Length: 119
Image (tube, rainbow, N blue to C red; front, side, top):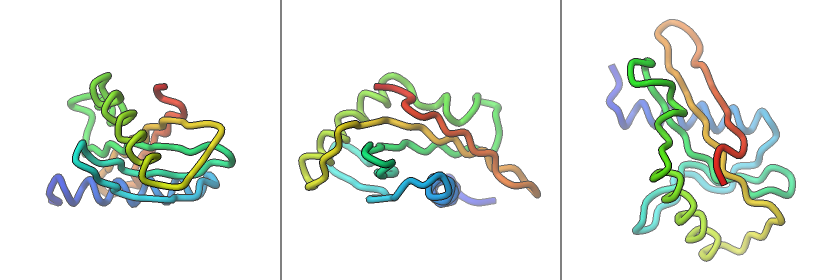
């Protein structure tokens, strides 16, 4: 049984592969500053995408994407501002996506991608 940290790393790997298959180009992973961490920063055409990944083993506490609360989305917006200030990336559109990964024993993970999950 993987630890919570190992489960999160596994889920992020699945999310990166999923987003890449959709044509997004990953620019950064696990970017940290003192306010927290951004899971994935990617390019989707002209859009810059800040993506939160939530991984679960089951749905006893709801679907993985439901774990992104209003407080979490506010923090991600602040982190996105910090990332933009630290990088020379410009985009006409900034988007906030959520990827939920439900890891199931003996079966492929179920991935849910919410484009523009919040603004």
